[in-house]
Length: 218
Length: 218
DNA sequence: TAGATTGTTAATCGATTAACAATC
DNA sequence: TAGATTGTTAATCGATTAACAATC
Image 1 (cartoon, rainbow over the protein chains, first blue to last red):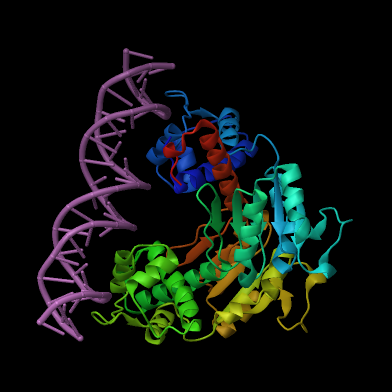
Image 2 (cartoon, each protein chain N blue to C red):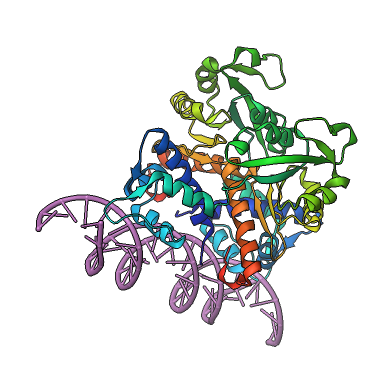
């Protein structure tokens, strides 16, 4: 099975679009509907589905319920995914309180921090000492973690997580981390994303001032 | 000038790597050094630079200071970029307190929320009523904003921002927003990013259990 | 100079799209 | 059936990489 990063991300987007279709009462959808909703071509939709072995009905489109179910299985959403979080700073706390994860079947089961003043074992999601992380991860066989620590600490935290048995990491520290062979690290660099927006705003501004829009492609 | 999304993002990464090289005392770097630091090929580095009209010295590599300066100008980092934030919930507050933006010459100058209990005009970064947004944006000619509101409110907030004159938006609401012709919307969907990590962890797990690693490409 | 590195062109690679046979 | 839609193959498009002349 050859998959590409983009096509997994699109699968998540199809799922989100399908849930919206479902709440609108749709029972079946065509590749065209999904394409419009996600902003891709219908060829792309059918191609993506064929990569993951998802098939619909010739002429009949796809049944929304079945399709959501198939995608959820592929994305591992048929069971609740337990995730740990390292870093109880501003970003970490925001993630802890974020409702979106549970809605999507992902649950932060514990948070870890090196700062003793931040610990709180009684909280709904306990904030524990980073020293306890390895035991916690191993006893619960947790495979996924989130890093929300300052950049200077991020690499060391990643090393500790991988050593504890974590296989996949979502990193919010503004430094590109790279994992080992059989692990995944997904870097979300907020500064960089904002920088990117600023670049295009300036580029668009220059383009419109010079009437050269056609030279810009975003 | 034909540019691609990826090549602007790489430009930010080069800049970050260069700052690290600088702090290590490097005066000049070669395309090879940057390639290693960012995880691309040296061809890619030189190609990217040529797209942006950045040139170095044949044989002599690139002078770190000059290169950083050139990249900063391209990315619009030669002056402080004023940004507004809409949404003073958990994520919004975390972004307000986030130190990384100012370090990178980007400053959140005001936050807006519809909830009157959240307003705080005296805070270091004032939290104002969303009703005041348009005036604020127009009088200060602000072009960039961040959305950190629940998904159900996101589209309406985007419309208000564009109407006020905002040209570029970084959206953290878990719904893909699309802007108008001459605007940029960059969607950062945290749920989707975590979902993506989970997919690959499961895929790697399956691959290693089945000894089929060669069938997976990430 | 000889060796090394840039800048750019051509080749390769991969991802997207168009087209269409199969078929309901 | 006729019309419409899937699933897949082939064509296209764009991005990355390799190669190398220029040159310091």
